[in-house]
Amino acid sequence: MNIQSPIDGSAREAKLRYLPGDYMILSPGAFVRCAVTGKPIPIEELRYWSAEVQEAYATPAIAFARYEQLRAEGKV
Image 1 (cartoon, rainbow, N blue to C red):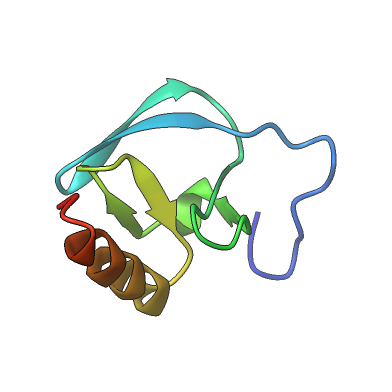
Image 2 (cartoon, helix red, strand yellow):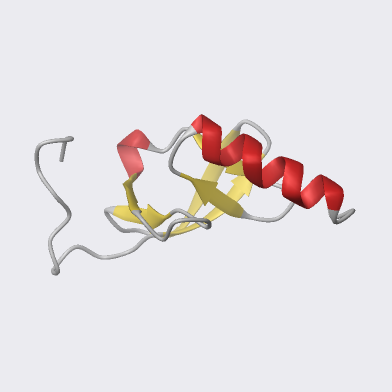
């Protein structure tokens, strides 16, 4: 799967446990969803997540904005 090949309806969503600097696959699949946008993120393109709140993010800008929001709420 790459940027040119969209995730189709038959692709399965993976379940991951996010760790600091890595993740563990709990249930295999082709993608995870961005916690903010709901956009599917192919596993091989997953680069941004929070181990503290167990969320994945599609872009660094989304990850930073979510971090700022969580920090303001006292959750990180």
